[in-house]
Image (tube, rainbow, N blue to C red; front, side, top):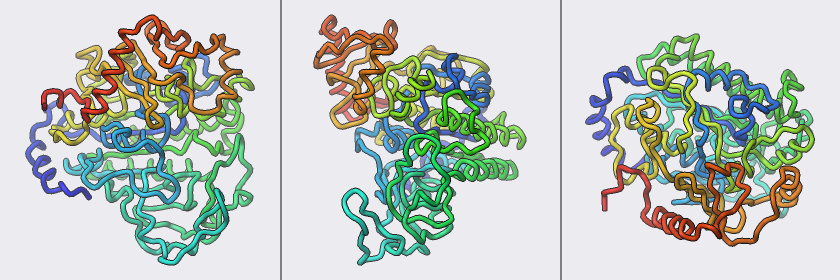
Length: 512
């Protein structure tokens, strides 16, 4: 727990009485977070989608759908960190937490569940974590890896599985956790709170599992429980999520549930009941299964009588994986439609994601907003709603979207910075989007050329900087950097300013 806990308790007590009467009682909060889901996968975002997503489409019709919503990064861990801290990941790190990696959170960093817990919330995380634990605390002193090179791995006997695992979700504001931390990373087993459920007793062996439906397993070697079945991930976490929601109806506390899917991230493993449920292959079936699980969570809210006082946010950590290129060719479904780019890329398809908010009494049904918004803004928005005054050294990049959700204003934020790898940035300012590099692609450039040819893109113009006007060129076809040197200069200066000053939240603009 953070070093400033006593100070924050005081802030919580001082501000607990100040929240608006219209939000009394405090709202429950359900954040549903998909993994590697494309902007064009949901029917409500893409009329040409070949994947049925009836539950998420219904959620969009009942609330506010943002068409210009973004994650902080084009990969997993950084986007999750930014969401739960209200801070751009690149202020601290760039890459993912690897297998058995340490926590991405520092002890003094205020997290969203910590803030809510201070205000009396019950807090739970279910599903994918991918933000690290202190695995070294349970690793035996003289343990050694087996195997060589990239296949080197800790064997199951390297850990004392009967001990609690420190510095995971429970150390950063969550009362409860259930999940497998990362579906394609060891250890392959369920973790409940801070202990494994069934201790790993063998090394990962994909031959023990049902065949994969599409692509590769992409599983890192390491310890596994013999009983582990990756196909049970969505069904079991959904059961747990439904049970948690129903249990909260009998308590006198508001709840925060952060439900993070492992899907449709690889391995692409839809359960048999969903085979053929889409026209986009197994990936489409996997998205459909994810949508079905979302429907179960939302139904639990309704059936338990809590839906009218629950803020629901649905989004994803980044764009779709490179399998989207093959899927577009084979099935005619482009997961990033109508955008350019995929996961890891700093083109729009890498970080512009579905972003839906339903908040009865605040948002109106079937609203669509073209405002630029970020998942980072969820933090300050919730803080404002519950009357929590954020200290200056926390949530430094989070904008309060509450006036936007209410329909009082058309926009809140004018700029945003996207990043996946060090020193490679895209900065948004109004309609302009500047890339400080010569291309926004990061991987699979062999597949890029064929895709661009099929979509009628012109050959690259070899300019060292890329600039696009998204109002007229959402597909990022025409690099106009050479035509607007003054815009390029202005945006490069703004990028440097936001990066070096350490914040971008409006409430901090006058602190110097």
